[in-house]
Image 1 (cartoon, helix red, strand yellow):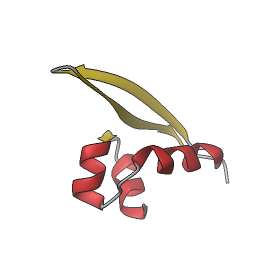
Image 2 (cartoon, one colour):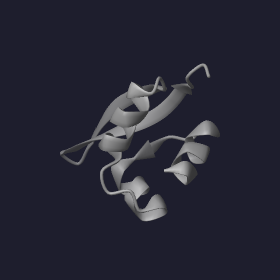
Image 3 (cartoon, one colour):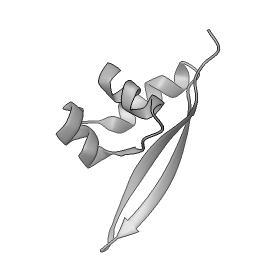
Length: 65
């Protein structure tokens, strides 16, 4: 998840398929859920293509530590 966080800190978006292929993260929504509980501001955009709907996440802010 640290590599994913670095990816998102660079302003990149991520979806479930990308998370699995690039970072080996099978359930991206679970990681996003935990990060939100820790105070990360993450935007979710739902995309529909060819009859399939999936989430694309973008980091908007980090918790104040």
